[in-house]
Amino acid sequence: MHPVNEILLKQIEDYIGNLFVPPDAALEQNLKEADAAGLPAIAVAPDQGRLIYILAKISGATRILEIGTLGGYSTTLLARALPKDGKLITLEMSPAHAAVARKNLDRAGVGELVEIRVGRAGDTLSRMIEVGEQPFDLVFIDADKAGYVGYLNQVLQLSHPGTVILGDNLIRHGDVLQETPPDEMAVGVKAFNALIATHPRLESILLPILKSKVDGMSISRVK
Ligand code: SAH
Ligand code: DHB
Ligand code: MG
Image (cartoon, rainbow, N blue to C red; front, side):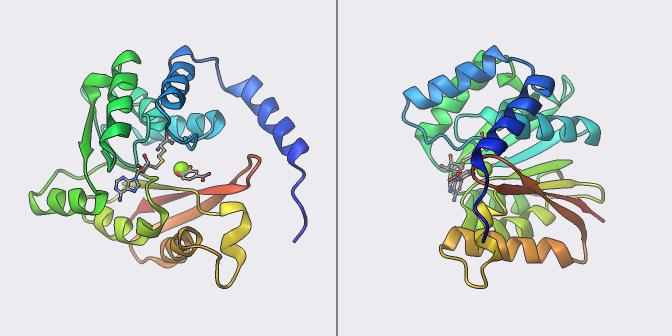
Protein backbone atom coordinates (compact mmCIF):
# COMPACT_ATOMS: atom_id res chain seq x y z
CA MET A 1 0.00 0.00 0.00
CA HIS A 2 1.19 3.53 -0.79
CA PRO A 3 1.41 5.92 2.15
CA VAL A 4 -1.17 8.72 2.17
CA ASN A 5 0.22 12.25 1.77
CA GLU A 6 -1.29 13.62 4.97
CA ILE A 7 0.02 17.16 4.39
CA LEU A 8 -1.70 17.35 1.01
CA LEU A 9 -4.92 15.90 2.43
CA LYS A 10 -4.90 18.53 5.18
CA GLN A 11 -4.32 21.29 2.62
CA ILE A 12 -7.23 20.04 0.51
CA GLU A 13 -9.47 19.82 3.58
CA ASP A 14 -8.55 23.41 4.51
CA TYR A 15 -9.09 24.61 0.92
CA ILE A 16 -12.59 23.09 0.82
CA GLY A 17 -13.34 24.25 4.36
CA ASN A 18 -12.33 27.86 3.70
CA LEU A 19 -14.44 28.02 0.55
CA PHE A 20 -17.50 25.99 1.47
CA VAL A 21 -17.86 25.59 5.23
CA PRO A 22 -19.03 28.80 6.91
CA PRO A 23 -17.69 29.62 10.39
CA ASP A 24 -20.20 28.24 12.85
CA ALA A 25 -20.13 29.34 16.50
CA ALA A 26 -22.71 26.75 17.60
CA LEU A 27 -20.75 23.87 16.11
CA GLU A 28 -17.45 25.14 17.52
CA GLN A 29 -19.06 25.36 20.96
CA ASN A 30 -20.50 21.86 20.46
CA LEU A 31 -17.00 20.41 20.02
CA LYS A 32 -15.64 22.38 23.00
CA GLU A 33 -18.39 21.10 25.30
CA ALA A 34 -17.94 17.53 24.04
CA ASP A 35 -14.19 17.72 24.63
CA ALA A 36 -14.65 19.27 28.11
CA ALA A 37 -16.99 16.38 29.00
CA GLY A 38 -14.38 13.84 27.88
CA LEU A 39 -16.20 12.59 24.77
CA PRO A 40 -13.98 11.13 22.02
CA ALA A 41 -13.28 13.47 19.07
CA ILE A 42 -15.04 11.31 16.48
CA ALA A 43 -17.79 13.58 15.16
CA VAL A 44 -17.98 14.02 11.40
CA ALA A 45 -15.51 16.64 10.13
CA PRO A 46 -16.95 20.06 9.20
CA ASP A 47 -16.84 19.39 5.44
CA GLN A 48 -18.57 16.02 5.79
CA GLY A 49 -21.05 17.72 8.10
CA ARG A 50 -21.76 20.21 5.33
CA LEU A 51 -22.30 17.27 2.96
CA ILE A 52 -24.86 15.53 5.17
CA TYR A 53 -26.65 18.86 5.76
CA ILE A 54 -26.94 19.48 2.02
CA LEU A 55 -28.03 15.89 1.33
CA ALA A 56 -30.73 16.18 3.99
CA LYS A 57 -31.93 19.46 2.46
CA ILE A 58 -31.95 18.06 -1.08
CA SER A 59 -33.90 15.03 0.10
CA GLY A 60 -36.62 17.28 1.51
CA ALA A 61 -36.65 15.10 4.63
CA THR A 62 -39.17 15.95 7.34
CA ARG A 63 -38.39 12.87 9.47
CA ILE A 64 -34.76 11.97 10.12
CA LEU A 65 -33.31 9.07 12.12
CA GLU A 66 -29.73 9.09 13.41
CA ILE A 67 -28.00 6.10 14.98
CA GLY A 68 -25.10 7.33 17.17
CA THR A 69 -25.52 10.82 18.69
CA LEU A 70 -22.24 11.47 20.57
CA GLY A 71 -22.37 15.22 21.45
CA GLY A 72 -24.93 16.05 18.77
CA TYR A 73 -22.61 17.57 16.15
CA SER A 74 -24.03 15.73 13.11
CA THR A 75 -27.44 15.90 14.82
CA THR A 76 -27.30 19.71 14.78
CA LEU A 77 -26.55 19.80 11.06
CA LEU A 78 -29.28 17.29 10.18
CA ALA A 79 -31.82 19.10 12.38
CA ARG A 80 -31.02 22.41 10.67
CA ALA A 81 -32.02 20.83 7.34
CA LEU A 82 -35.53 20.09 8.67
CA PRO A 83 -38.56 22.30 8.20
CA LYS A 84 -40.01 23.90 11.36
CA ASP A 85 -42.47 21.02 11.84
CA GLY A 86 -39.85 18.35 11.11
CA LYS A 87 -38.57 15.74 13.53
CA LEU A 88 -35.26 14.03 14.20
CA ILE A 89 -34.93 10.97 16.42
CA THR A 90 -31.35 10.14 17.43
CA LEU A 91 -30.29 6.93 19.20
CA GLU A 92 -27.49 6.87 21.78
CA MET A 93 -26.36 4.15 24.15
CA SER A 94 -24.46 6.38 26.59
CA PRO A 95 -26.55 8.54 28.96
CA ALA A 96 -23.49 10.78 29.44
CA HIS A 97 -23.18 11.41 25.69
CA ALA A 98 -26.92 12.02 25.44
CA ALA A 99 -26.74 14.63 28.23
CA VAL A 100 -23.97 16.54 26.45
CA ALA A 101 -25.91 16.33 23.18
CA ARG A 102 -29.12 17.59 24.78
CA LYS A 103 -27.39 20.73 26.08
CA ASN A 104 -25.61 21.30 22.76
CA LEU A 105 -28.81 20.89 20.72
CA ASP A 106 -30.79 23.24 22.96
CA ARG A 107 -28.03 25.84 22.83
CA ALA A 108 -27.89 25.56 19.03
CA GLY A 109 -31.62 26.29 18.86
CA VAL A 110 -32.68 22.94 17.36
CA GLY A 111 -33.56 21.16 20.62
CA GLU A 112 -37.31 21.19 19.99
CA LEU A 113 -36.92 19.25 16.75
CA VAL A 114 -34.79 16.50 18.29
CA GLU A 115 -35.68 13.53 20.49
CA ILE A 116 -32.76 11.55 21.93
CA ARG A 117 -33.59 7.92 22.75
CA VAL A 118 -31.10 6.43 25.18
CA GLY A 119 -30.35 2.71 24.95
CA ARG A 120 -28.75 0.17 22.67
CA ALA A 121 -29.75 1.14 19.14
CA GLY A 122 -30.68 -2.43 18.17
CA ASP A 123 -33.17 -2.60 21.03
CA THR A 124 -34.60 0.86 20.34
CA LEU A 125 -35.02 0.06 16.65
CA SER A 126 -36.78 -3.25 17.48
CA ARG A 127 -39.25 -1.34 19.63
CA MET A 128 -39.79 1.27 16.93
CA ILE A 129 -40.59 -1.47 14.42
CA GLU A 130 -42.91 -3.21 16.91
CA VAL A 131 -44.98 -0.09 17.62
CA GLY A 132 -45.18 0.84 13.93
CA GLU A 133 -43.15 4.06 14.10
CA GLN A 134 -43.75 6.16 10.96
CA PRO A 135 -41.06 5.67 8.30
CA PHE A 136 -38.12 8.05 8.03
CA ASP A 137 -37.07 10.05 4.97
CA LEU A 138 -33.36 10.05 5.80
CA VAL A 139 -31.25 7.86 8.10
CA PHE A 140 -27.65 8.45 9.21
CA ILE A 141 -25.97 5.28 10.54
CA ASP A 142 -22.93 6.21 12.70
CA ALA A 143 -22.86 4.06 15.89
CA ASP A 144 -20.88 0.86 16.65
CA LYS A 145 -19.49 -0.41 13.37
CA ALA A 146 -20.04 -4.11 14.15
CA GLY A 147 -23.76 -3.36 14.35
CA TYR A 148 -24.16 -1.75 10.91
CA VAL A 149 -25.56 -4.80 9.04
CA GLY A 150 -28.18 -5.33 11.75
CA TYR A 151 -29.04 -1.63 11.76
CA LEU A 152 -29.49 -1.62 8.00
CA ASN A 153 -31.93 -4.52 8.16
CA GLN A 154 -33.92 -2.75 10.88
CA VAL A 155 -33.78 0.64 9.14
CA LEU A 156 -35.22 -0.93 5.97
CA GLN A 157 -38.31 -1.76 8.05
CA LEU A 158 -38.58 1.94 8.96
CA SER A 159 -38.15 3.19 5.37
CA HIS A 160 -40.31 4.01 2.34
CA PRO A 161 -39.44 4.16 -1.36
CA GLY A 162 -37.12 7.15 -1.65
CA THR A 163 -35.68 6.99 1.86
CA VAL A 164 -32.02 8.06 1.86
CA ILE A 165 -29.68 5.98 4.03
CA LEU A 166 -26.19 7.30 4.84
CA GLY A 167 -23.48 5.13 6.45
CA ASP A 168 -20.34 6.65 8.03
CA ASN A 169 -16.79 5.30 8.41
CA LEU A 170 -16.90 2.73 5.64
CA ILE A 171 -13.29 2.77 4.42
CA ARG A 172 -11.42 2.88 7.73
CA HIS A 173 -8.07 4.00 6.31
CA GLY A 174 -8.20 1.18 3.77
CA ASP A 175 -8.75 -1.58 6.32
CA VAL A 176 -11.79 -2.76 4.33
CA LEU A 177 -9.48 -3.56 1.39
CA GLN A 178 -8.02 -6.45 3.35
CA GLU A 179 -9.62 -9.82 2.79
CA THR A 180 -9.73 -10.31 6.55
CA PRO A 181 -9.81 -6.81 8.08
CA PRO A 182 -7.83 -6.30 11.32
CA ASP A 183 -10.68 -5.53 13.74
CA GLU A 184 -14.39 -6.12 14.23
CA MET A 185 -15.20 -2.55 13.21
CA ALA A 186 -13.63 -2.94 9.76
CA VAL A 187 -15.16 -6.42 9.45
CA GLY A 188 -18.56 -4.87 10.24
CA VAL A 189 -18.37 -2.04 7.72
CA LYS A 190 -16.89 -4.32 5.02
CA ALA A 191 -19.98 -6.54 5.36
CA PHE A 192 -22.19 -3.42 5.31
CA ASN A 193 -20.54 -2.22 2.09
CA ALA A 194 -21.05 -5.58 0.38
CA LEU A 195 -24.68 -5.62 1.50
CA ILE A 196 -25.65 -2.13 0.31
CA ALA A 197 -23.78 -2.68 -2.97
CA THR A 198 -26.05 -5.57 -3.97
CA HIS A 199 -29.18 -5.22 -1.84
CA PRO A 200 -32.32 -5.69 -3.98
CA ARG A 201 -34.09 -2.81 -2.20
CA LEU A 202 -31.22 -0.30 -2.55
CA GLU A 203 -29.30 1.76 -5.08
CA SER A 204 -26.01 2.81 -3.46
CA ILE A 205 -22.64 4.46 -3.83
CA LEU A 206 -19.67 4.74 -1.48
CA LEU A 207 -17.74 8.04 -1.42
CA PRO A 208 -14.20 8.32 -0.11
CA ILE A 209 -13.98 10.93 2.67
CA LEU A 210 -10.52 12.45 2.70
CA LYS A 211 -9.22 13.49 6.08
CA SER A 212 -5.92 12.56 7.68
CA LYS A 213 -7.35 9.05 7.95
CA VAL A 214 -9.01 8.17 4.65
CA ASP A 215 -12.57 7.09 5.38
CA GLY A 216 -15.83 6.80 3.48
CA MET A 217 -19.56 7.46 3.54
CA SER A 218 -22.27 5.67 1.61
CA ILE A 219 -25.42 7.12 0.09
CA SER A 220 -28.25 4.68 -0.60
CA ARG A 221 -31.78 5.21 -1.88
CA VAL A 222 -34.51 2.75 -1.03
CA LYS A 223 -36.36 1.48 -4.15
N1 SAH B 1 -22.91 11.01 14.76
C1 SAH B 1 -21.95 11.63 15.66
C2 SAH B 1 -20.83 10.67 16.02
C3 SAH B 1 -21.30 9.38 16.64
S1 SAH B 1 -19.96 8.49 17.41
C4 SAH B 1 -21.35 12.86 14.96
O1 SAH B 1 -20.86 12.71 13.83
O2 SAH B 1 -21.37 13.95 15.53
C5 SAH B 1 -20.76 7.00 17.80
C6 SAH B 1 -21.76 7.08 18.97
O3 SAH B 1 -22.48 5.84 18.97
C7 SAH B 1 -21.10 7.19 20.36
O4 SAH B 1 -21.66 8.26 21.08
C8 SAH B 1 -21.44 5.87 21.04
O5 SAH B 1 -21.69 5.98 22.44
C9 SAH B 1 -22.70 5.45 20.31
N2 SAH B 1 -22.95 4.00 20.32
C10 SAH B 1 -22.04 2.99 20.29
N3 SAH B 1 -22.66 1.80 20.31
C11 SAH B 1 -23.99 2.06 20.37
C12 SAH B 1 -25.15 1.22 20.42
N4 SAH B 1 -25.07 -0.11 20.44
N5 SAH B 1 -26.35 1.82 20.48
C13 SAH B 1 -26.46 3.18 20.47
N6 SAH B 1 -25.39 4.01 20.42
C14 SAH B 1 -24.18 3.45 20.38
C1 DHB C 1 -14.16 7.05 14.45
C2 DHB C 1 -14.77 7.99 13.63
C3 DHB C 1 -16.15 8.03 13.53
O1 DHB C 1 -16.77 8.93 12.72
C4 DHB C 1 -16.94 7.15 14.24
O2 DHB C 1 -18.27 7.22 14.10
C5 DHB C 1 -16.33 6.22 15.08
C6 DHB C 1 -14.95 6.16 15.18
C7 DHB C 1 -12.69 7.01 14.55
O3 DHB C 1 -12.04 7.78 13.84
O4 DHB C 1 -12.18 6.21 15.33
MG1 MG D 1 -18.70 8.41 12.26
